[in-house]
Image (tube, rainbow, N blue to C red; front, side):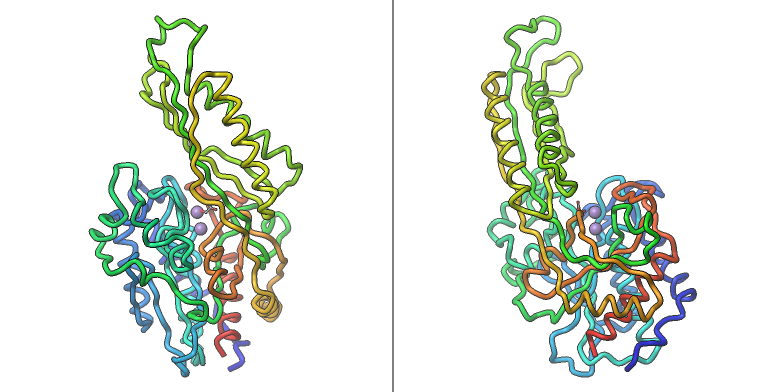
Length: 418
Ligand code: GLV
Ligand code: MN
Ligand code: MN
């Protein structure tokens, strides 16, 4: 069918905004803060809420052994590989309500709009809710999609533990997800294509007044853990000469990473130390141990790797001149993803037909699509978010921006599933 009459946007947007707000209330923190860590009570309640909405739309819901959730709108030729869409509903501590959730509930809304129009997809359209896109609990992002794409093996997954020492195995079991982890891996061809709707998490679309971004590349993220062992002691009794303060050493590394990321001269290189744990963490005690978690990204993985090398070099130097020991561990170093030109063309055409302005752009944030790209042609559709703000409670996307994204997504899904 020609999806041109797609959408009576106002009506469906009210429903979608209501659902986004309702989902935001399912949080471990008080509103408006959203904190929803994978396999927590809030995560499980949020999953139940979204699965209920999917069933309400007549979708067939199933879950895999790690909790990735698939909600299928059966096509007229159900044996064909489906067209996929979706994102995540877990949220980092102190987050807002749009990251991930716009792609999940917006994907569902796109399906419902097409249903209301009487559209009959030839391919099934399958909404995917990925487990643990955020690295908060296990230190590694995109757990569900990483395992689907066989980038993380079942053995590596079994070795994962959270900060309290609970294993992934134990936590997925108590969340009700059982069965062999081997079964999470999907073969190429399981999805015909995959599209993820997401807020930009950067300022460009809003600044330029553009309705939707068509993502051509997803940046390559890497994460390195650094543990510095120095010597603790009394903050008054131990004099400055001869100190081996682990936090002072960490400070040099933090600034070293900043300098290394700036040194490439490329706007796309970024380096962040987001976690700094100090032991014993008492005001009158010299820090004896510090754990840093670093996040380094670029759209060019070779250039990103030069920053990692410089950071490793700084670790050696600082260890030597401060007399501390420094151990490093690469948590992940993923290659960038290139989005599929045919899906990009379909999205561009859909935006044009919907009367929405669009531009091609790169994603500096990572997403489950980074891993879906290993097993299917993918593309991402960005909508603006105010001030480029994300991973904060004041993250905001207007109903108009969200409606525009859902409109373009619905048209694109209609084209791809026909
Ligand atoms: C995903 O949340 C990211 O950190 O890019
Ligand atoms: Mn996020
Ligand atoms: Mn996200």
